[in-house]
Every structure is written in structure tokens, then in C-alpha cells.
Image 1 (tube, rainbow, N blue to C red):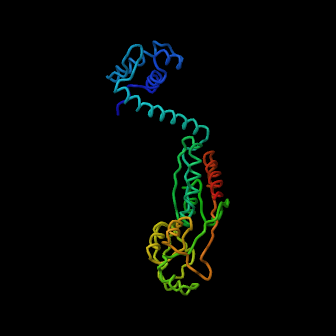
Image 2: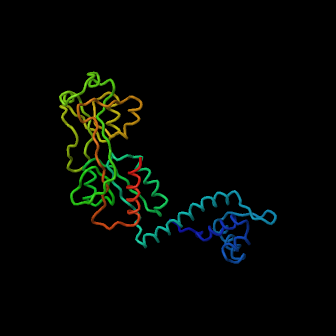
Image 3: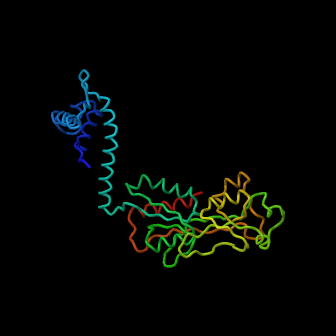
Length: 295
């Protein structure tokens, strides 16, 4: 790859000429002599082999090529500035990336609100977001691939911070045979029907929830389970926040169980215990706690 012939400082100079309305104004803004500004722009045009400015009366205006190149150069200069800021922040202990692992049952709206609030405070720090199911979150903590983790499980050896409850509902399509019974349902009723469950994504999967049905179909995501059940295939316990639209549209209806139609599970925030929390990780953790408590 050929080395650039034009430096970032030259692009900054051209931007100053355009933004401040001329060579003299740019020289004053940059605390340089007017002759050095003129020389810099002239040298740029020579190096690029194309005119960037042309004189109209007493004013220098951009050529068509200059318009295009100046627009592209603004993004280039901005990225370079962000890179320098990131390097400085890293030198101050600010981490370049936070690895966040979240149980798929955690409300997406609350997660999005926390990440949106983190963005203007991130100072260039990226977020690597990963969704897992049940013990898959624990695996990420144990293999050191998570800085922060949200799980509905109690994970041995880690101090949890309780954040919020997630409500699960036993649901089926309104036309499902279980609804046609038109009475409170027993476990014996459920045993005769197909149950849709979400697969644990961990290396050593665990069974969670009622699994008494003789026939079970396993899927990998809550969204797929909701779609299958809404289409009339089986029943399932699903997070209310994930199926609210189907409930409102009468595609899903809670089952009338004698007990267990609704189940609530607390969610917990965990931090990597083998690695000190950097400032960006602490800020994101605080925001996750704050936004998990809001309705």
C-alpha cells in the first residue's frame, strides 16, 4: 500500500480555509502566517495533481473535485481524532471494549436503553454483546469471555447484583386444544400436548421449567418458540415482554392452569471476578442497573 502523499495536517488546513472563509482568516484561526497557509494548500494541489480551490474575485472557492475531497477528508480527520482520543483513554486505563453477555430472556428494551445511555459516555469503547440461554451465560463468565453478564441463575463463586424480575407465562394459540377444554388445566392435561422449549446454550445444559409433556420440541431462540406457539403448534412458558404483541393481537392466550400460569424469575448482574473493572465497564454496569429498574 502506497503511503499517503497528503498529511492530516494539510487536510485540516484546507478545511480551515473553507470554514473560515479565506487564507487570512484560516491563518488567524490556526495561529500561522498567511504565507504558510497558502503554501500548504498549493503543495496539496501539486501532490494530488488536481486543483482544490479557485479564486473568484477576492474569495477562494472549492472546485468540484475540491468539494468531494474536502467532504471525504472531514470523515478522515474526525476518525484520526477519535483514534488519538482512544489511545489516550487506553493509556489512562480506559478499556477499548466491554464484553457483555445477556440471557436471552432479559428485556431487550431495557438493554437498549442502557446501551443508548452508554454511547455518549463510551469515549470510543466498543460493546461486544452476546446472547445466551440459561447456563450459557455462566460458561462465558467461567471461560473469561465476559466482562459483565446478566443471568437468571445463581452462579457459584460470583457476587450477584439483583436487578429485575422477568415474568414468564404459559401460553398457546387461542384455538389450541387446551383452550377448548374451557376449564382450569392440570399437569395431566399438559402431559398430552406438545411443549416447545428453548435450548440451554451452555456446554452442560440444564433442564429448566416444567418439562412434564411426553412430547417436547426444542428450539434455539425465544422468538422462534413464540412464532411456533402462535401458529398453533404446542404450548410454552415464554417471557411476557417478548410476546406482548402476540398477546395484544390475540395470537397467544394464557393457559388457565390450576397453578403455574405465571412464573417470575429475578435477573442478576455479574462481573468478571478475575479482572479489575475498568471505568467503561463500571459505567455500563451502573447503567444496566439503573435502566433495569425502570418500567
